[in-house]
Length: 135
Figure 1 (cartoon, rainbow, N blue to C red):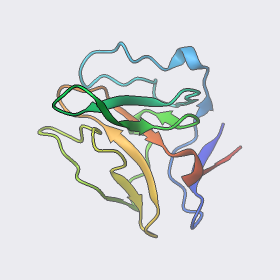
Figure 2 (figure 1 turned 30 degrees about the vertical axis):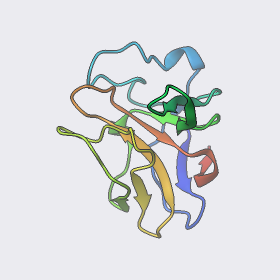
Figure 3 (figure 1 turned 180 degrees about the horizontal axis):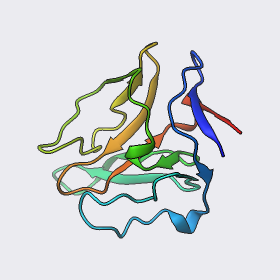
């Protein structure tokens, strides 16, 4: 079993989880459904992004939701005691994750993006450079 800590201060961020395979991360789930089972963490090998276009249809920039190497967990595996909300935190029923990282550590480090709004999946994705994995 493994768990994640904050690279900046060493605070523990997750419960014990097993390392899952890429196929255990399912983005086809319904609204507010978790993309990974409780007790599983999955390293995402590809960047999740979408283009931001201007009025003429030209791509202005690429909006990155999570970089390659991000770690996905079920929100139930997140230890929230030493975490704080950061960023915009948009969403009507929970965080929609559309504006990037929205979870920070008590030490001030930016850690992860959480999705959990009524129209999104339920998931937390940690920035790879923000966490350390322990066995």
